[in-house]
Length: 391
Image (cartoon, rainbow, N blue to C red):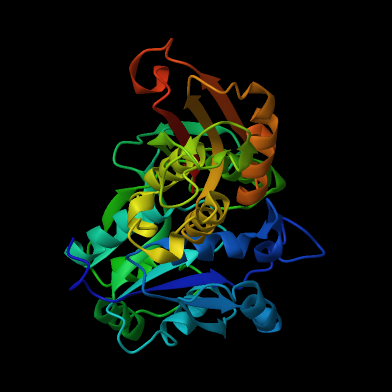
């Protein structure tokens, strides 16, 4: 979908319940999962979804102040308003508070805090086409009808049945029309009902079995497991770096921030720390940020003889600012002489300190090419590095 001309989508997050089946001391939306509230997890998913432009949270009157503090980091948050006695009235309260430019509303129960930005997008895209769409999942269990005598009376056909979930996304004008014509009573347990009673069709979008509504303590355990697993399955990227410098008289030999006594040093615009340069390139490559030449040109006098540790620090801040963290670095120094095995621990220490990561995330090896090629003839040194980052 062309993002430049799509309609404005406002999410309405319903968080006005008391959660009586969960806790006597705290409302459901304030219960923590993996250190964050249920409400926080739901709003985070909508905030991270590119299809959502603004968010209205419907809260209990006595929790509005808490909700505003809890959600302060989310720039898409447009308003926090108080809800009504019933779910339908709370949804209406949120609808009356959306921004003027909103074209569609995505109404969501905050208790469905496992929703993902991808699932939100899939429902919104169908709503834009059909004016109304709902998250759902197909019924897979065999359904039994229990009679008035409390015994199973018959098996019900499950073909064509789905379990409605949220978000439920509607064209603004369609939803406003439904609100004006359909009475809001306790029989309206989701927003699809008023659209159905208006005689309009709703497109079902499968969002799977993880999009559960937190209702009991068992659901909390499941949600915590899923959120932890998603954290382990963050976006992983890998980058490769390679650098080479020739030896020259009158230069210091610096590798991994360590000065090593030798008759020659490596020639370069900076301190020519070939190992650190390869590591920087691997990190930049993993984050799709080009290479060190793009950021630290050898024609810029500001970098003349500069320590590569300074440049490494800047690369570290660069990738951190884009939301990446370092998983590990594996580097190989290729050089005939001098022997550097005794300096590797210090190199690891220097690099880990600059990048603010554990030393156990860095591995440095040194090898020769058995007197073959330019490194074997001691004309220069080379280094390879592979970095893995996550976001």
